[in-house]
Image 1 (cartoon, rainbow, N blue to C red):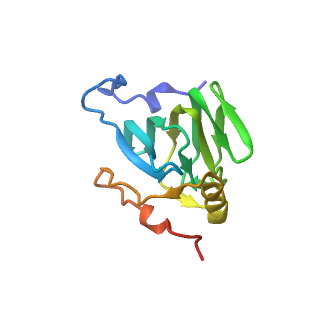
Image 2 (image 1 turned 90 degrees about the vertical axis):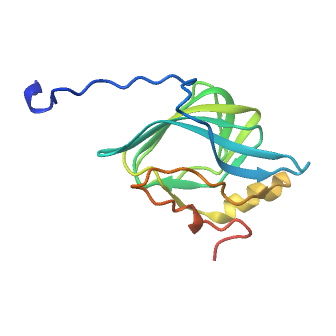
Length: 174
């Protein structure tokens, strides 16, 4: 057994949040225009966002049919499908699916199911993402008659730079 006196920090206590806490707002983080002209988005509530050690836990709501590009994160990442379903590449992920994404791996593109998707996600380190196989994203959008919209403005903590502008939304990356 370990020596808990080496890890215990006097005065630290758990932080409790509820999905309806008024100080935790929904943020629109991604959007696509569907073939019928409607917009589907990814919405997130960041429940815990820590600079040291870095981690992010969030509750996500994906509108029906939203498409999310294939990507990885600068940290290990886990997600759990609470309600609805989605596709991760060719893999169907119904409610109850747990996905572990090791550091250095990529997943997607994702497509939310007809009823949308509710997720719980945790990134254990730098939560920002990097792109992989942009052509797969564009093929998925084209197959659905959808188009990527510019990333909405989000409110990141001051200690973290938004890297999403590195993504190309109007065509395949070179």
